[in-house]
Image 1: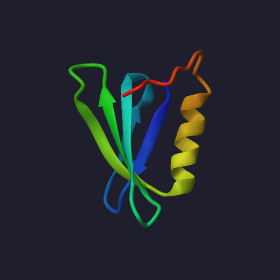
Image 2: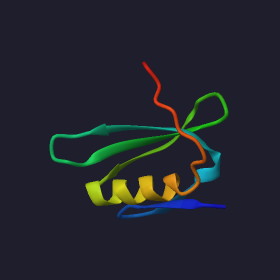
Image 3: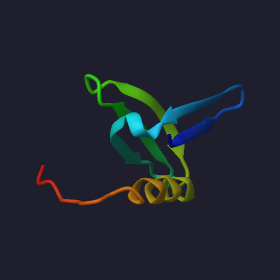
Image 4: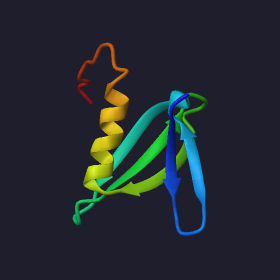
Length: 75
């Protein structure tokens, strides 16, 4: 199990990355990223978090370690 920990001022929560089907991200003008994690079940949002550029890179590196094949979608 691979967990992604989110720490706020008053709580700590975890997302099991093995349950994540999709991640959407939006880059803000200040360089931070809003990340939304989606489940395999009904495309429901599991959680949303703001990350710094460095934290975003760490997340991508963690996820890329398990990628076997990749294609670019023409949306």
